[in-house]
Image (cartoon, rainbow, N blue to C red; front, side, top):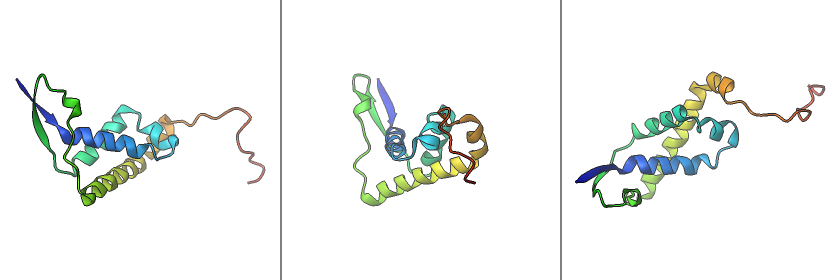
Length: 116
């Protein structure tokens, strides 16, 4: 029996993880660990690029499948879409993120309000 594998989804998820590693932990990395926001970012990117599929038999290690090497222009386009998606979602959900993605503060280490 053969299985259809969505190579684009796998590659996008890997690329999102790689790009998010370069963003500050708070609020970006922390926010996109929330499954709904992560899925929204994945959907944002996937809806803007072509999708590639392949067939694999049930005995095949389908996790080893990858997209063919992408030309530089396509790679840059994918990276730009991910950055755009991160910013678009962060802007659209900023109020929600402020309430649900709290930065933990250490007691007695907050900046003084004396200096305005």
